[in-house]
Length: 492
Ligand code: ADQ
Image (cartoon, rainbow, N blue to C red; front, side, top):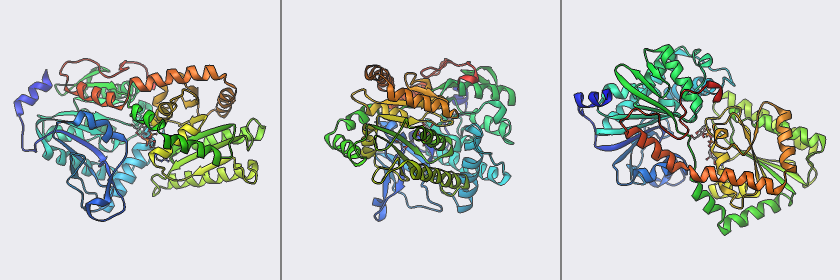
């Protein structure tokens, strides 16, 4: 294979000794309270726990940003993983992170729900910061190491790293959607992004539709040739596949049966006034999550009397997110005004229609909320996967509860037994909620049971294992579960 030949021809160059280098925008740490190294605490869930089993016995380095502008004093390691901080200046934070990553790429990759900004200074910062990450990875990787690059902040890293270290094997995984060509071609630096990604040996997306979108663009904008699952570019072979991310389903189910969490779920229901029905939304406060549309649908159901306090209650947890961005501040203002209007119209003294919390909640509290909720509303306008939907299912250990899920979340491809809705269609959301309220309990159980089978069968450990073993595999075969490469973009 050509990529093998490349590796052999160059051998290893100057670098470190890690077998595996993981690169993501953020390190798996955040600043907690306390002083010195103790003030850094691990971020729960996510990539770290997904990778823990596959990392065992390997020498691993994680390259990423601390989350703080300037030089942060980081601990050398976290849970046996060596850390290499990539510093960002204040200007780079504005231009690379707030600007190009979150103002250009995020909206462009999410169907252009907000108008993307195309600022040349943001692009310049994106190139410079990607180069810094690539340099850090090149310095950390041992001869022939595996390097796993994550997400939309770092799409130039694969090709930059390949130029520095042709001996390493490079995987890239995109956590968010990859847009269809009609949208992507708006990007002034569209060819550079595609070429950046083509530096990888394996490019993973959440769903097959994204594979098809990427492959089409690669053939159109560069000299890449070949089928969707195996492209050829500059004498190398690049495999492209769908690897739907998942959750630690066993851990969530175990927590959902712990006496403390069960007790807390009862307390939550009691504090809500022991309603007949609790509907729940849990999201980062992001305009892609469709929270406003969902609350509007709820408002109509309260107005028509299908829902009424104190019998029916909605809880919406919105994690503060990207508050430095005006799009997000406006989203929050609009949402909070709307929740206020609905509560003004439909609450009673002592009985609130929509309980709204703009805060992050600890994992066990989140699971208690999942247990307390009869109906989970997950209605993003576009979402790469959406882990909340899978977490709710994993928490419903007695197979009760209903999941109303947007057909535009990646999770909808696997969670076929959810009640699927078009999040733009308020009548459709209302019909879905009416339907689950009246759903025969036996029918609801059978739907939940089949959803549970999906999340139990394919958890986050399977996801990490499948990606990394596909990355090691030299043969040119389409990879990943459901990697039905070559399907139409309409499938995304
Ligand atoms: P996100 O857009 O952040 O991730 P999501 O997949 O929903 O979205 O993950 C959110 C995580 O945050 C979940 O694990 C959830 O439990 C947690 N969370 C949500 N609300 C919380 C709260 N109030 N308090 C504490 N925790 C909360 C991106 C993509 C997704 C993709 C993931 C993983 O946008 O589409 O699923 O990456 O690839």
